[in-house]
Image (tube, rainbow, N blue to C red):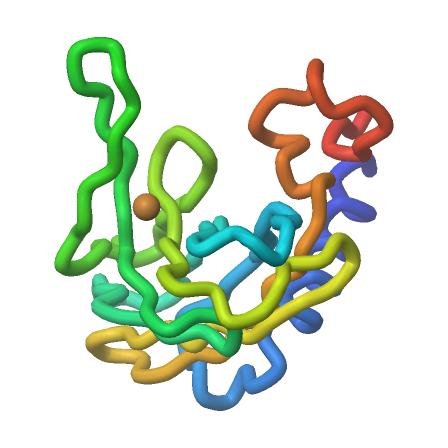
Length: 162
Ligand SMILES: [Cu+2]
């Protein structure tokens, strides 16, 4: 089967991304990444996928990070052809569903970076859910994370299964 190695890879990724599965309950976070940024950068953004395997909807209501003074949940808004961003009070994670934070949709905004985001490095993001409580996530700092965004401008990524 072609799907099996992919599934195994996903399970492996989940176990890496969520170091405290006991606390997370039905909430799993996958593919958490952030673009590398030079030390002068004031703000950054993280992207990830939140999956809810439970029978009840949950809400992501807040977050903190190990590399910024403040964290907000943002969505991208196209205003008269110009991309801006808007804060959200919460993000709904439907039962047996997921919410995807990706370039162009939503992001976890990191305000007041206190450390440089260096390629190959990582930092901790603590997500606060209404029902599941706190879930710690390791965010990988990598250019490769953008593979799902536009593979044409990021050569050499392994986002494709071909
Ligand atoms: Cu933002």
